[in-house]
Amino acid sequence: MSTPDIAPNGHQYLSLHLLESLVAVLPVRDENGLPKTLPFGGCTRTMITSQARRRAERTHTRTRANAGQGPLAGHTMGVRTREWAKLTAAALSTTYGWEAERALATAKAVLEGVGLKFGDRPTTKDHTKVLVFAPQTAADTIADHLAANAIQVSAWVADYTKAKEAAPAGKAKGRGKKAGIDSASEHAEEPKPCAEEKLPPLPKDIRTAVLTALAPGDAIDIALYGRFLAEIADSPNVDGAIQSGHAFTVHAAEHIDDFYSAADDAKLDRKSHATALGHLEGMDDTGAGMTGYQSLISGTFYRHAALDRSKLRANLISAGFAADKVEAAAEAAEREFVDAFVNAMPRAKTNTTASSGSLPKFVLAFEGARPFNYAGVFETPIDAYEASVASLRATTLLLDQHTLVMRKRGDVSAARLLTYDLAVSALLAERATAGQLPGAEVENTAELTCR
Image (cartoon, rainbow, N blue to C red; front, side):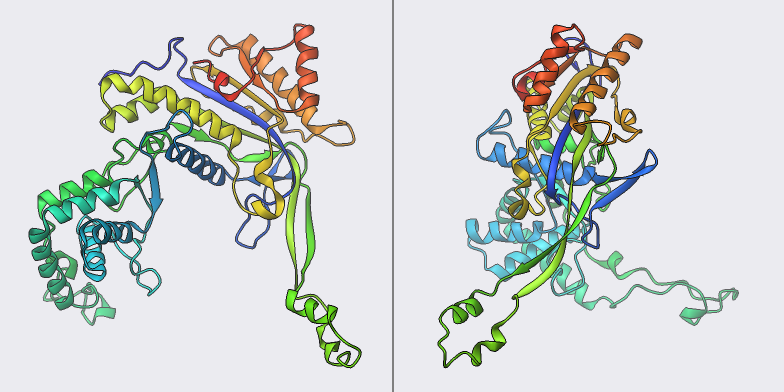
């Protein structure tokens, strides 16, 4: 297959760089509920992981598309979940009137038949052991095929269930002392095959239909972000077109442990209506209903992502997009990715910190023959005592860095610059007047792609 056309100007990669200042938030935390950190440039920085950012961007994209908003309105999106059996069972029950227990048992058996395994605990027995990123239409598509072939499916499920119940509980043990076999003996008995090997295979046509439904298909966010599904050998994996770096503060980490107390409404109501005679009974109503600590972070963060336009188009072609629709889909996906990069925010502590209302201080976008990460320009942490505003100093460093790279290399374009900050806007205007701007300021995210 020939390499798809990547862009009118021939630049394969779109590189995005962003500065954002966050105050008293906690978008992501570690297993102990504490802010994530990393050492860099001789000091500890606060970190927001790329995983958290990617999920925020992916769900932002899906929500907008499903609501008929943005460049990808009307396109199929993906869902990453362990609940495909429950979703398929719900479709069988709702659309075709299957009894709930039969629908769930059938869906689980069929998904096991293609190679997925389910949890061992009561709370996870209906969930696959791994997350499966598939088109959001997959459950309905699988349900349609199972219902259309109900007689064949029911016969196989009955045989499969019977064989599974008759099979030994555990796998046959191999040779060795723990199995009661002398491993040195020439007459040692060969281990018996695993019980799973005796289960009747899923009929080929049903297996093909289920694998087709779970394949990336026309889910554009799978083409963008990729997926890995090792449990089903013949289900295609996708190497994503987006590269995302961890966000980190351009200065030393700034954390606080915020003490909080939560009031008990019923207790306070009793106290406010207490009479003199009830004073003694109200003595036990002193103190808060609950107290604790929450860690909060503040700072100016740098983050970076890059889009491989060639890979995006190759993924769309591999997924079965019609040749005459690939270019339009790829351009729409690029515009939506840029919007998500700028606007999406991880949702942890959103209600108590209003973090999702943040706007970037500065966005720098350009194209090149390879992705460019400017994280190294912040190796020396910005000292608040030396720089009156850390975000302004960081903006200046990014502008100077791109000016240098443009002068040294011929494989990068001029930058497109976007800001929502008054001070940064004034800085850009000042540098533009002096002829020191390595590009041009734009007014919205759509213009960052220059498509």
